[in-house]
Image 1 (cartoon, rainbow, N blue to C red):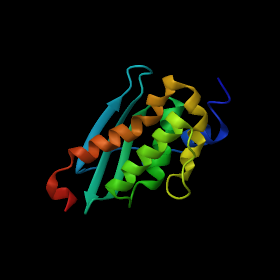
Image 2: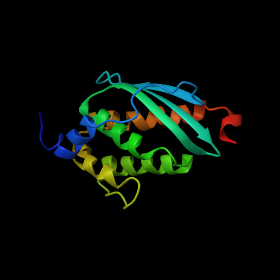
Image 3: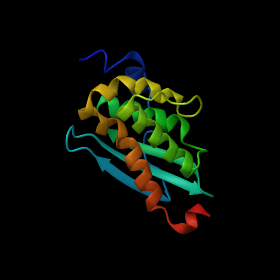
Image 4: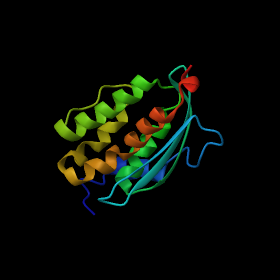
Length: 145
């Protein structure tokens, strides 16, 4: 295990995942998987006025994917679609360019800075955002009104 990659924050997030399970009646659902590592996540959301009002996920993922899913699950309810997109952009900037996140909603993504040195792990970190974006796309126009 590379301790630079699996730092205490990453392992802490992975060990404390909330909102595990499925929603009874989601507005949108999506699954994303990584062929490289075999990680898989299914995300259910409810959406009202472009705001995520409920969220749940089932995942079978490595510690990096679990940690990213944990950070998302902690903050996603109450966020707008734009704020979710902002989070994905923040994580991408961390992974691609080692840019620190701004303070606020997505500040905890700073823990993923060591992952930037392991390009083969970027997909694992981004997988929960991919599933969430697909679940948003899966919502019907009526659910976002």
